[in-house]
Image (cartoon, rainbow, N blue to C red; front, side, top):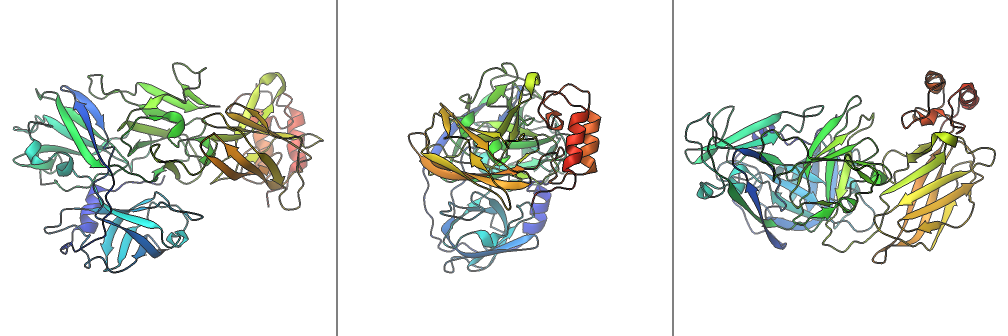
Length: 534
């Protein structure tokens, strides 16, 4: 599992050095937003701040590079005093660097990095929880913002005692308790990493009682406010900068079992599920993942989620699985858990774009390879546009026929499409794209095995935005365990499934798609043994 945790204890250790005095910085002002949450008495309330604190620097990147677990970002000019962004002394802030927007090609848009040091024109950042690409892939002239983390004292200043929170006069009878999830814990239903109460003019941690006013809180996470021991319902007024750029939120996975990710959107407006950016197209949300939401109107401690969503050819609600709930609204500042299904891969990044900024490109929510397994039903294989490539491991028959389906948030049109065969492969279209509302279907013919072909979609439009994009499709018949090789592992996997009813967990073993898993499938996998993707 890869964690996105900004460990409070680690931050104090890494960042507790003397700081300089702030000089002049080219600060750009984002719109200011105001939001209010009701912190119910005798209850837990799940809270995320839908704004950032005001950026203290907005500038342009000259160059960047990763070395080990750290990165150096160089900006134009010399806007800082050495180590002025480092916590300590009279400098009460921890800072992060937010990358983007990025125009053209490049990576790291929306990524957030803890700043651990700075020179006059450089930022040293923590890259331990980054993806595998180097910071050098950030194009020159990309924007970078330096933003202070939210802290207990920034959200609940001492002057708001009795207004937005209730001080605790007799610990351990805590009246307002801030509970921070343990983002690094493996598995589900994670414990809390830290708990804070206000006493004698400062926020203190339950574990040690010391002053923790300045502990940093993750901008894309949430916290739970427990109001107890006679403390009344109070309003929390949140004021901050409206984030106008994308955010990339890391979502951890584990190889066995499920993994909870406590997350939030830094957005001040309600967002439909279809517009959250969680979708199979980039592996951020795939079949068997779950999205859990909490009901802050319910007065209760240790709340269970009141809604559980999955994605299967559209957003499905546990209590109403037959209807696509893609237009259900996620409230501004909603705390969420993304429960990722077991995966052998690394953490994935959820890219969230503000719906109040005009979109510049259009991508599907999902692309799948669909086949009907006779009377057993229809089963889809996800074909993501980025990250781990999708692999169609079922036979296309003697004619090499495959069907690719794209699903969008809204009705679309398309100007055209074409296919580029992979190395030593061949493939063609069996006809023009078929458009039906939010769905585009592309039928392929003459597709040979053992290749990664590319589908090109041209002039796809939802009436507001028009885009061209390409999707890679791996073709490797018999690769039932999806490791890009066909060998004894696939043969044994198919043998183990032989005789069982074809379902959503074993349909890949029905390689000849006749609705049964039997000796014919085993022999077919054997015939492909020794093949692999280039």
